[in-house]
Image (cartoon, rainbow, N blue to C red; front, side, top):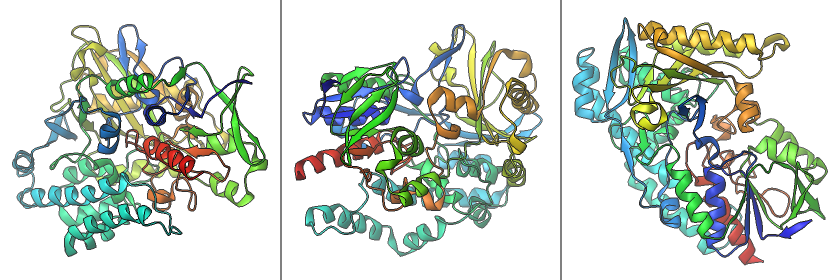
Length: 522
């Protein structure tokens, strides 16, 4: 067994980097292990064609919580926002673009519905109030309901004051909205189908559910956390490039003397006498440490890296029942020219009605790939020209619904991968006439490809869908939502824990703080 560390962090995505940096700055000897050849995880840009690079997994860069910014000294990171947050195809090459400025968006909406335009400012203001409360919730560790410590109760008292600050109307609205379907929410407000579809796309993002499914309003709120008033989609981007956050946190970690190793896949977490003793690598090397924080998904961590003999059968059953259900594919395009789409610097969604979105979801319920997938795309080379050669562009498309588990035992082979890529290309070409003729190269990543490339069980970037039974303090499973697992020394610090996916470094930071607090108690 090699050198002993105070803690080992598995996975060098943003959560892993943040956890390692937080522990290192607290004076711990930390080893950060990454299975890939470079750091950054899902935020890492990779070359998919000569001279063309892209980040396949993220249409929306995510939110970097103030607790992480201030805790690691990342105030120098600058974020910009697209003027048009989201555009929806109307067919025939026409698009409805929703500007981030509510007044400008209302002027555009007025061409289709004066009634909807009149309500837009109030709607976006309501969303901002509700997400403001969720922001505060996402920066607090899950409560210990058995605590008698006043110090542990102080943050909850502050949260209670913020909740009361919503006012009676918005307090009721929060509880009413969270379990609603996003279609019910939007039907309450608007009449224009394209407008409702543009907003609803955020409520089904990376989840195997349609707009009529309960709880998709919460998914919408989750993905709007941290955005400014008026934004209805996360069309923000880091001025320093797609890897800006990962690079900045890596610098903090290295200055805190964190030891970093790449191409170091963890094969198992070693145990003795009901406690963690370290990890064993695929190479056969064993490394000792009394604490392991895993940022891999809960199923991979607890059912594959840990010998089940150390875990209770009921707990294992609960972990095995976590809904991952990857149903999203990614298609990367190298283009010889910019697609003629207004608002292409934001998110472009090609499904113009809630009915069409629901029909697309129907196929996935039965293990089939939708014949008319719900497609969204961005053109990241507009934000970061270095991703493509001069005058050329990169387009990243996400397609729902392409289920990981196919009907009748079918598998994702080369033929199915190619067919899916063709479907997505046709969908974009229909909305953007002439698009297909601009494609120089195409790479399709199915849910199985995402699993193999990024270690995502079932290709689920969420590490566990944001269904109502898997949100907030119920991640990864009820009763184990405070980062420490039922084996001493093992912690979860990835998106499978609170606060979930898209909250950059949130789980990693809170898991590291839990480790530090537990060590102090001992």
